[in-house]
Length: 283
Image 1 (spheres, rainbow, N blue to C red):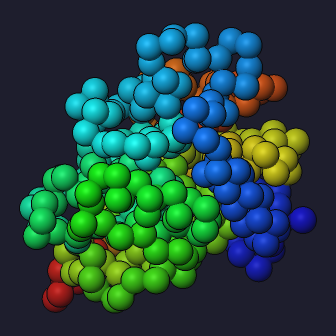
Image 2 (cartoon, rainbow, N blue to C red; image 1 turned 30 degrees about the vertical axis):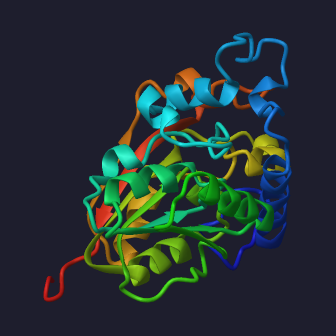
């Protein structure tokens, strides 16, 4: 049964089970070798037919990353995960403090670090120890002295109050069984005037019951998404202003392949989600 104490829970799993299946999936991904193929390579008609382009690179290009982005990060930080490119909407400036919710192996963090420069800093938070270990190793490969990775849940951020200018995230909030708390925490750690700029999936129709209760579907960003209206309400309740959710019309090109049994683009779409914490004194 879902966790009825949390009215935001979208999946058919209780909160503890949801956290467990998500952590297990990303621990497995994190411990794959550099040569191991991502989950998109598990089917015969996968994206892995090109010997010159890795599946991770292929997926990243679909999500909106440029060849320059891919070439500028060393190591295996790009795991081919996500549903967009949050940095493209973040409008980062030199000197900014950036927080990445669910930072994985660090790909978005390293790209953000290049924009904020030596006077800025980037913090990645991930709840999977194996991912944090991989990200820290990648930080060494990229000489990313202004990036650090912390172990923690996005519902309980290990980050000080009012210390962050911009929060980014790539297809992670949908994995949380308590999304209102995620946005409350985001609001807490942002400075007045700080911004939220994330990519995530949103519901456009009801999820089939069999998918909602499937642990693999929940852990792979298929079954835990919220509708645009619900997300707007959560962000408003947390105190954000200038809330905007914009679905990506072309996201069906990659979302439809996320499940072997369903065309999930029939009820799911990638979207950009932006919002701002009011300045001190704003109503």
